[in-house]
Length: 207
Ligand SMILES: [Zn+2]
Image 1 (cartoon, rainbow, N blue to C red):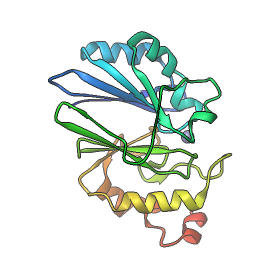
Image 2: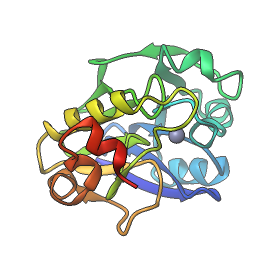
Image 3: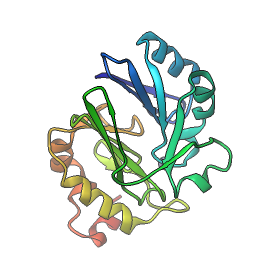
Image 4: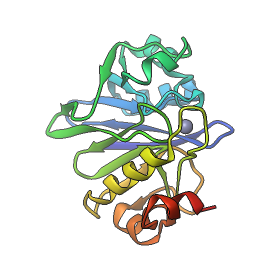
């Protein structure tokens, strides 16, 4: 697969491009800033963009979605709990939920419902190689659970769920906050304190 991780905007957001090398069909995740750079990357790889997937409703993950859609014709997908929170900052064409999947060539993409940082937060399993986590998990950390709509209990449960996925997955998170741009899920299980809290109480006491 074609894989690009773009660090964009003053909040160091990551936008991702994935595409099948043979068919050139692809999708992006969380276009928050710099639609020109995103479009240039799509053109560079000669990708036919068919989907724009929003991991959650926060402005820094969605603000460039409409411009990318206008230039590519791709449809915008989000969870049903995300849709009413977009408030016109991005439009949407399709509601997706746990288990939604599609294929790009021989590569399967599967949607996981992982609420907590925001209602409707999604993660994506891509080609059994990458795990796109949005703001649910960062390298060595997790997303905030103290924002409007956040729920620490749900976030803790979502992180526990991610722990059940295979170690070889490459974690692709929503912000460039950590010591590395990506790390394997196995390393996160070992080193990320938010994955190692033994219960909700311990989780909530983390700095
Ligand atoms: Zn967020």
